[in-house]
Amino acid sequence: MAVSMQGLQSGPALLPRGAPLLELRGVQKSFGPVRALSGVDLVVPAGQVTALCGDNGAGKSVTIKIISGIHPPDGGQLFWRGQPVHIHTPKDSAALGIATVYQDLALCDNLDIVQNMFLGREPTKLGALDEAPMEVAARRTLADLHVTTVRSIRQPVSSLSGGQRQSVAVARAVLWNSQLMILDEPTAALGVAQTSMVLQLVRRLAEQGYGVLIVSHNLNDVFEVADNIAVLRLGQMVAQAEAPRFDRQTVVELMTTGTVKGRRFAEVQAEVQGEQALENGPKGSQPWQ
Image (cartoon, rainbow, N blue to C red; front, top):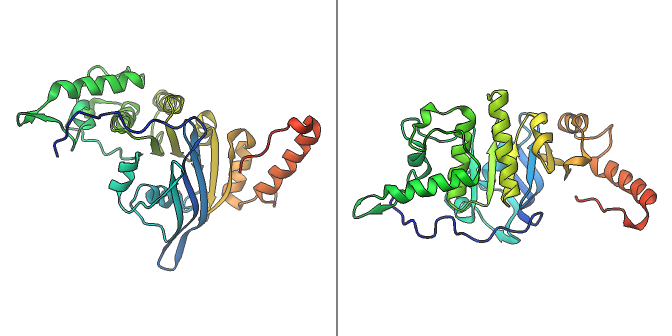
């Protein structure tokens, strides 16, 4: 499909940092008799990194596939930029400005960086590919994200490291006006240096105003980049709050038992917040649930 270069990277203005970009309320999903999600609530703010944690089978993949338009929800409501939306297909999700980068990255090894970034949306001029503006747009997008380790934007993807491939996949999403990046296990099977590269890119996306939803089993990565943490267990959202409200042991306990020392996370946080309010007086902050 040939497209025009006009309007590239000129979608709706990014929301202020912390404003709700995507919200799920009471989302449910079943596959036959198996209840995959039970009344899941989730808020993904603009300009922040939200980490979605959970053990295998917790419902993380189903959640991001509902957001991405692969699975329709059986119940509940999705909100985009404060407005209710219905996402029936991946095309609907992309049209809103949601891009999902799965573990396989969906890159073609035999094509170069520019060709991958424009794959399926190549601009044409007089019936031929309009290569010059493609190169300019690809180079500018990579530079804006501070992706500086690739030798040439014309080198084949097969020659890139794992971290560089992740960078190209994310840059492709930025190039096409995405406002929310969903990254599924972005550091899986990467070495230390490549993991650092990807995590720096994730933080850079948030700093530039994009919303980021990262699915990860690696709690070291989660606590390095996340502003907010949400924990799923057996299809239920058992906790969501700012990252400083958690420590690693608490996240592990929530993932495995759904509670903190036998109590609901919200109850524990309310008690902690009450103690802080007594210590700080009327200026104590209010918990974000």
